Length: 368
Image 1 (cartoon, helix red, strand yellow):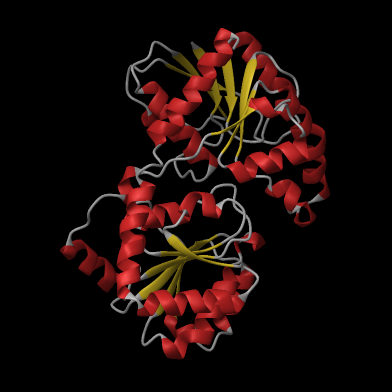
Image 2 (cartoon, one colour; image 1 turned 135 degrees about the vertical axis):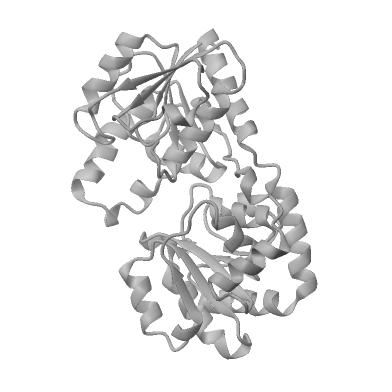
């Protein structure tokens, strides 16, 4: 097959959709199948990311994601390439089809929370995404919850929407020596037990909620710390600054891919308070690393965590506090959730994600 992939979000410092596109294409390319790949990019050098001699063509296009120009440039370039399948790994799509098209919709936050977006972004979703979704040959979603939202809000053909769960990177399963963990804890001054969470500035991530819960419980948690990694927004920084427990809260603004598994593995408990997730990779990464998980019961998170964590309503502070105290004081329960979580996380692999995706390509090419 000739397979074209929108690789504009793949970069040297990629997260989210870029990482998804890279891990997926990497597994296709290394599979040994007789396929030819065309990666459409904005000039970011990608050759170092794939094996030398792999059947990969790097095609430069000028239009950035979600731009007006991509509406015409994408189909024009695909017309030149002539692929059997084009895969758009995000909602940056054109309403004009040039070949059989697969698109991935990771979540419906732009619709569910559209009041938080600028009007032009809302307009794009309504004028472009709905039309593109209804004309796509296949739509991949990360969870049943997102499938339900896509069907309700975009109204595509139900048989074209497929749940393809994401995978968790193998680096989160790797064992870490006691010496390395000791050095890590010393470097970040984490000798005491700590709760860990990862955040972004997006309001639905609900990060200040965790700060307030920790503050309420601080006197009952011995000398435990709260460690917050990622990209804190102004509301979170203010919540930490004004907290009576501020001295026991650590903000780590940037965590490298090499160190993220160490933060998970060293955590006494992992916390996740998001109000909306299309999938929920952080709890899955925590489970793979062996951290006991407490997560909100919203949207897709129960699909990912299953019976391997404790749940709370992300609008009810007392439920999170109760779960934190329960798990903090119960070493047997922490050990049980750690063991069950690692076993469940091992079933979410990028190989499975790639195989399911490739099967959809194959069926489309055959005209099934």
